[in-house]
Length: 130
Image (cartoon, rainbow, N blue to C red; front, side):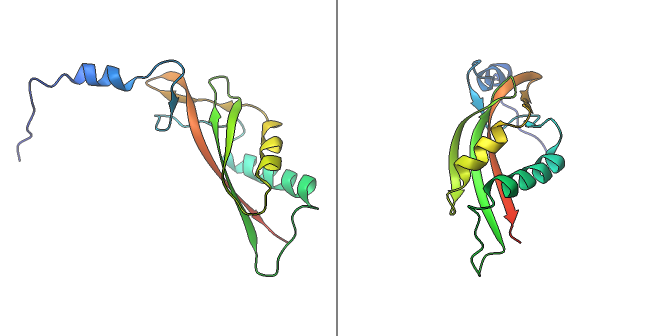
């Protein structure tokens, strides 16, 4: 097997084109943004907070065992969360959930090419109903 390499292709220029400006919001990174306490602790605490603060809004229809909410936001370079958009929310809880998330500690920001960058993040949240 022989690899074909085009000697006229400028790999360095292509790499430089991939590195975007300071305000670019990345979707693919080398190291994803994440909660400082890790996802396991984050989701455990988030579920408790949602049930405590939104218990009266969460009504269990006979056919539902859980609720799924998906929100998308930008994790900024300082770890703050901005620009929330709702991806999926059949129970109209996403705005309340995002307010709960914003009260939590800042996240560890994403990294690309060993630089801290802004990142789009889609967070699926599954709340088991009692």
